Length: 269
Picture 1 (cartoon, one colour):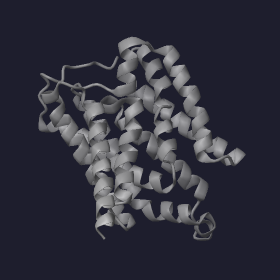
Picture 2 (cartoon, rainbow, N blue to C red):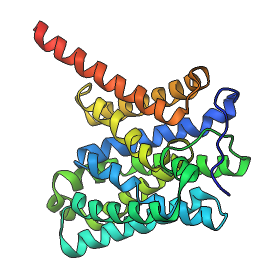
Picture 3 (tube, rainbow, N blue to C red):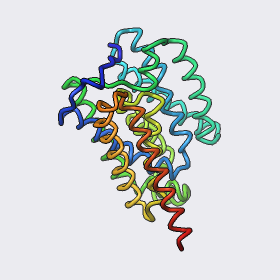
């Protein structure tokens, strides 16, 4: 089943149409807060592009592209973890290699409008089954990030301390990559493989200079991601644009406004 483009100018958004995007944004905010602390801002955006070959293959086989993207993301996450674990190369270096190969393969397999929709997403209604599965996946992501928050932080600050505390560092790193992959898959319909990584990173980066504690940072990151998503979805029909790019533009504008306000406060002092 190919990604179907719908006219944003005529699409009516019911409450049910907002449930999955909001859940996706909340998951993205939580995952992004940890990704930024792990200094994976650029690497996280690149990792989301690994979905493209899976989306392309699913389109060619007339399957659900989200399932193809999820399969590629999970395989990519396992490959990144294995290479990092075996070669001891930095995570961002391994992701960079996997990303480049995935983008090239995906571009070869798709073309035209299908490629644009895979890259940037498209506005369309979701079926009941897809919505239920998406909400279930978002619940898994949110539950994991809340329960594993302390273990992820300890493993980030001091791997040696984490090991002495009984934390399996390679395992928690793998689980985080898998959860990251699942989060990207949640946003493929709305934002595509190029923009989903931006929703994960931009609100989290904004939250880092607006807050002073991990808990506040995560809450702020989630709030900004959800607010940007809702604003983009509601404003897109009025502006006659696709919601995906608009969501990211709004998130970036909030980042710029917050940064300008922070600098203004420093000058005033």
